[in-house]
Image 1 (cartoon, rainbow, N blue to C red):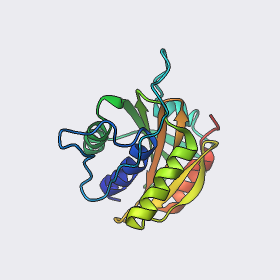
Image 2 (cartoon, one colour):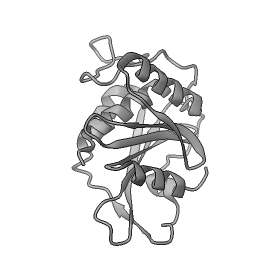
Image 3 (cartoon, rainbow, N blue to C red):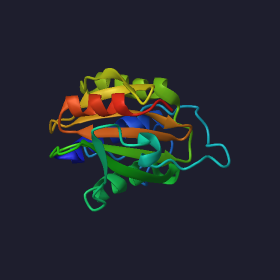
Length: 193
């Protein structure tokens, strides 16, 4: 799987859900590399003082029976981190990532939690971002329950599947895998938050 494009798609959905383009780069527009467009800002507002930083392990909880949790490849995620930092600007707070895989499997699902300094806007904001991507670029999606919260599931141009949903007040969970089944399974295994 080549998750780079999948991450770009996820970044577009996240940007749409986290205040749109109000924190533009020096060019005066959100950078897109041709795949991300910013939606109108949401009135979500800043994170409450003392909002807990969520890590991937917080979202996954204990490994479900028959599954293992692996550390992510920080070097492989370097481009992901750089893209999100650029898109979110001062709203970026950090991330945590793990891989959830069935015991003995060759592949699994990347579980990435993005923490921001702004409220996530909830499921409606993320679905609204997916609708904007569908309207602007023809990117289809469907609703998927991820850890008890609804968000969009889409397929990137490289074939990878991406789901994104709120994980907390000021965080989102992004699931990325090379098959739809892996993303759907991981989404169903994550405990409700």
